[in-house]
Picture 1 (cartoon, one colour):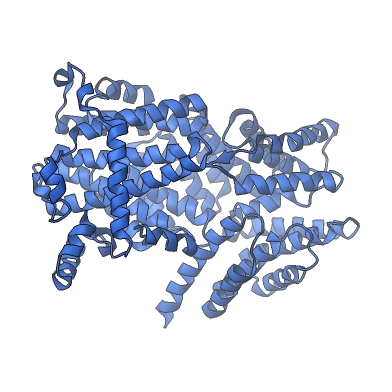
Picture 2 (cartoon, helix red, strand yellow):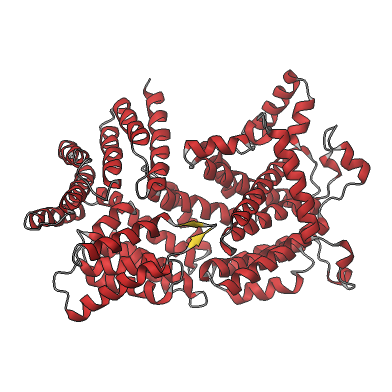
Length: 619
């Protein structure tokens, strides 16, 4: 809508108005306008989707006869939603459900909260019955939101195409209905990706996300262009807009440049700085979505930065957020977990274990949340080289979690193979896990998971090498990017380095067709370890030796590409930004078609963005 408005204004006036709005609100200009040549086509698609959604989710004649008897005013709904959030983050799940369910069919916030509960259950369990139920509840939620959204007459609908939308016509309730509609549509789109595996499902999910993105942009316009009946209502609305707009900006900015170019054609844009600024603004507001802004900031700085990026997260900000949130939610499973993650990223492994265990034992209603702690405890103990303890948490994941049995089975086997004293029962367990891992390979949105494909190749290698793998758990630690923790604790990195060197000596006594693949793996792992130990000369020596084996590596071609990027990061650590950029760009252009390529492309994109910013700052 704002695209059509923007095009009808003279360029000079349009730029002044957009600039003023951006200045007044802190939103980026790209969020308030869109200059894409394809924007008209994208808007047309949005209108078609909206028509389809209204047909699918809303039937005005289906309102219950007793609807008026159950109506709740917006202020009361916001208060109860705030209380439900307090219950949720203090692990009082039943109390939150009881509060939300009676009005879920008539109140946008009760309906949204109820749908979120069931959506989380579907994501945590991955069971089809929960996925179907979540889809049904989100449809009901969208229907409730449609009931309260502003309705245009036929004449007004035609007029929308030719003149500026008058947002002052919207009531506070109608504005909040637009926001909740956008939020529910996003969850519905995410669910679409996992409920079946067809290309049609993928396309429909993508179209819903595009519509959701446009809805958030519309909400940004509503926030700044209308007079609010209640300041409290405005604060709650703004926290939601900041959350949605900020999360979209941040998410899109992390995608590889080739993907971003495609998304820009259909109207998406992403700006990491603007996204983080919006999320921080939303966090500092006392709005309903404040806690969600906190969760998103923690997730980005403590997980995303360390899994798909090479940069450090803002640990000071995370410390500040967690201090405040743990005062509000002292037994909250999520914030206890993030506290453990903060200590983990600082290299404080004993403290991390304490908080992860506290998160695990804080509640037993959603046992699937225990699996988050089990996953982290597995890697904490791997870094400590405590293979027996790591095996314990790996076994919990294999036995209890359904997220990815392929990954869990292989990881458990990989940890067990690190033990030199494996007995007959242990070897039989490894055999069973290796045989089971490929059987559970799954498809999401019609695509195999890259990590599961990688693991299936490793399982095949295990049997091809007469039931042997070279440092399988250490390789996984590198792939999951947990080597970054080694840089915070020299003792840990030295222990890992010694383990790799011992393996390299043992390789000299092996003679099989994958000898050079195994040698290249050890060189990459030791080079990456040296980098964390701040020994750039030794790191580059090993990484270059790994790259020199490119023509002799039979299967593990990913090693060479990762070694090239790692060497670029060594140059970055030495503040040789020009050489770092050219080395990483060479990896991007030169190597294709290897395992875990998409994972590396994410890291390449993040590294290049960060390095180019630093280069600009120094010139």
